[in-house]
Image (cartoon, rainbow, N blue to C red; front, side, top):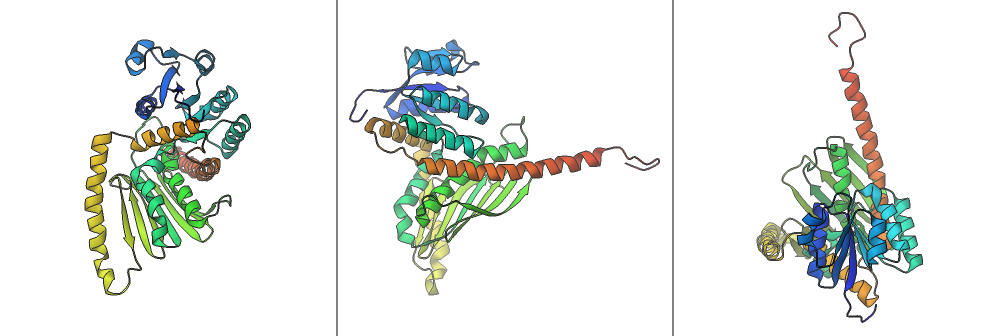
Length: 359
């Protein structure tokens, strides 16, 4: 499709709230047009105002693929369905964009990227935070702060679905804290394929996950909490000649360059405060002007450009598998903690077996 001016034909599987954000991002790209959507719960009448003329609404992925022959398929469905749908689309010759969590297991992720490579199509994961302004600025300025030493990735959130447990909510948002770290660890160390170690964890069934990761000489602490306030997401990257702070709520990158020793250390708080004031003002202005999910729009456009120009996808298959593998291991550990918590809770509620006891 290199050099082609034809519009990319897009199919969307899943029309919930996130699916509708995808429709907006596809339209904003000006490179793709939706030719059909698939969702057994979708109403053609309700979807019509959201779709371009001629787009169809069907109940199954198979019918969407057969009737519309899309170039690329967006999969915005529950995580447990991602692998089967992605493989189905790849076998139909489609490029695929899969929302996060990409798949529940690394084995499924590996199968998808291997099948895509064999069929000559591209895969993109919903790692949209990597394409927001702060993360893009990290790439631009990383060389200026010297050798990377440590990363802190923090994400405080809230329960948004009362039908799932706190552990399930943490597992759902965990990729947003992990994939920036995967990207930064690979950038900072230059190690492209070595495994990322999980050195330790502290986990709570009430919705807290703390993990210590390491790649080469660089360590990273990942914190995801449903209880910490205020709600915010940031990465601190510390290196031998300064630090970067990628603030994803404020939408800016704070940069402190230089050793920060001697009398100059007294100015560090003022420099940081100035970065915060100006950076947040610029970030909020971009959000107001550009709308919500700016990273999604940028990622979709770059993915489509890679399809059109036959260039590498915006993220590597290795980064996708890395993220799933770390999340899978942390998720399994969270499941163990949750099971122990539930066992303990049941034991406290069990009736006392002895006559006359209070229970």
